[in-house]
Image 1 (cartoon, rainbow, N blue to C red):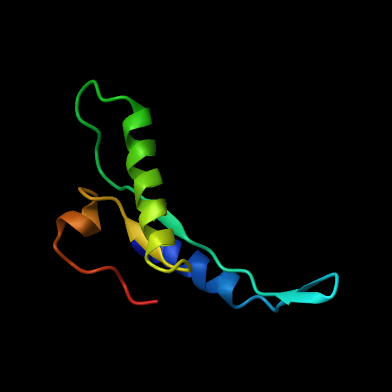
Image 2: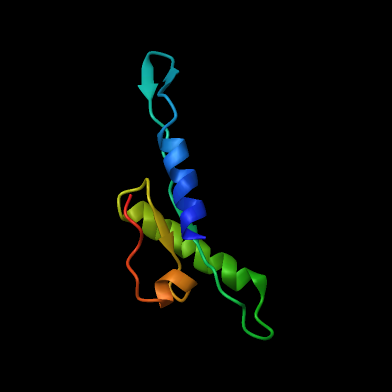
Length: 84
């Protein structure tokens, strides 16, 4: 999952700048995800909340990055986030 999200982020970052009126803007992507098997009886909303928290962590960490939810496969492995 991390590789897919990181690939999307890199592809968006590589887009040429867009001209909006008199301003030229670059587009970036921040993403948060969770990747785990839900517990018995756990609602899908819980997974969405985890992914949403990871998204806000990505924005807090400077944007244009990907963050795994705590407890998702990469986060639980103890591995650091993949470099930008």
